[in-house]
Image (spheres, each protein chain N blue to C red):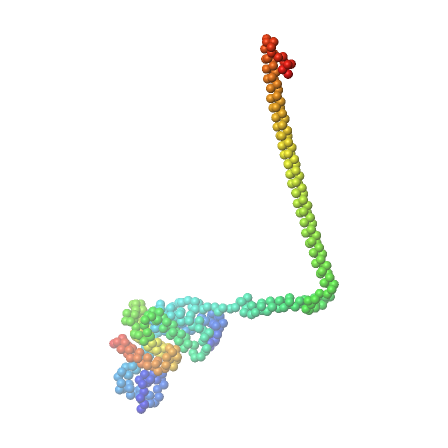
Length: 223
Length: 180
């Protein structure tokens, strides 16, 4: 009889997979090995206990909390959107560079890459540019002329004011000098007349003495 | 007759069908709750564990390849969550460590709950280390084969059998004491 492990025998017995030789070994171990038989008894008690076991009912709990809604991608979060945006941008750039254009003539649509304008269109564009340039230059010249005129007017005004004020001042100074001269003349005259009067007074005084003293010269002699 | 299979419900849940997901929960919540109750010995902890398990299952639902029964996969996640739960509660304890005595007694409410409703085995299980408790739970209450238990716990079949044998060695005393 092969030598089986005790836990192997017990496991096989619990699962009902004992072979003939294992069954013999199991029965022998139960009768001869007290410890093993106690293990088997404990297993039996456990199985009986489980059979009579009543499951406890689950208390109310929040089952919804375990569920999280999977992330659904919104249309604006479409993953190809950036790639598509990039492609359309590139297409637009290529169309601009190559001069792509759409023409509608008499109900027919023409797609093409025309980058060279004809001579007539070119002349019209040049004329338009020249006219625009001419108008622009005329406007600038007019503006410049007006500014120059205003500046000239202001300068003339200033000059006139200066001349007027300077001549007025000169006249005032001349008059002042004249008045001063006249005043000086008058002062001299006054001093002259005062001296003359003094002389006359002295003469008269001498005359009065002469009348009294015949030795004294007369007024005419003195002069 | 018209009951949908687990795979059908899973596929619908993955497409965002909440009703399918809730149906799947209702199908397994009792098993998981009672598993959690026996593993933790506490109603509040069992409820927390129940919620954590189903949150984790939903998060990893897309990883379920349909290989093997959904129930096995579910209990595998439940076991990992349970280990996490124990690590959070007792960071220094290993899976093979015997629980502390005072933790086994619990509150009178817990003892009443375990003794009156869960039976002697459920009460005695609380004295076992987590590694052995998990094997006893899955073998006797979950009715899984040793291959399934080994796959769920990430151990070899031989280790699973050995752990059950060791667990029964401790349980025999506890059960005998209870029956005495």
